[in-house]
Image (cartoon, rainbow, N blue to C red; front, side, top):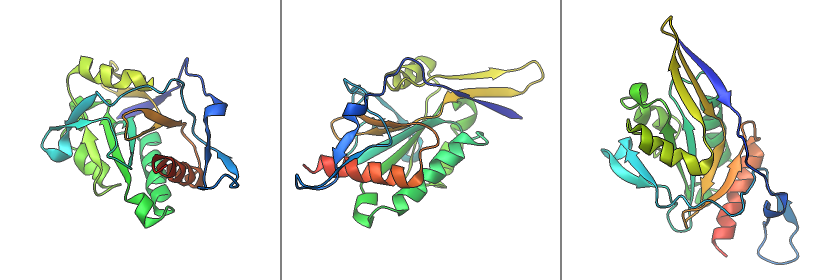
Length: 207
């Protein structure tokens, strides 16, 4: 049996002033405050990569394609609640976007429980997104290095009775095409807000 405990983010400051984007192209359009938050300065993560289990282990860089947004999540496949809820909400959010915008959203999941997940992570993420990327490594130092700029915390512990307890930060992350962390959503963001934020991020990449 697996027990799951969320890890709350510590020491990260949300800058409300940086979380406003114009949704329209002209200056008369009203500004909308994003549901997610930005960090200033935005962490650069584009130089990081992990093996992509959906591409025979090829390195997958933490950077969106030009004009796209890469949404990343750190979790594990035995997660009973936070992970499937977050991925399901993200899938529904993309379905509420225009087809053109939804096609510009890439999704990748990084496993924090690689010992159990590596054989099954590809099928897991692609049960939510047909073209989702499954990222994982058994190199503990490399995983920690990949998680650090996001502020992700996680632990996998085995109790005396054999129960495996996994704790991890439950946030969702958007990376832009410059390889910077553009936005962070806390668990529980509404599907409509998530869709609107993604649409706004894509619009800002076109300007």
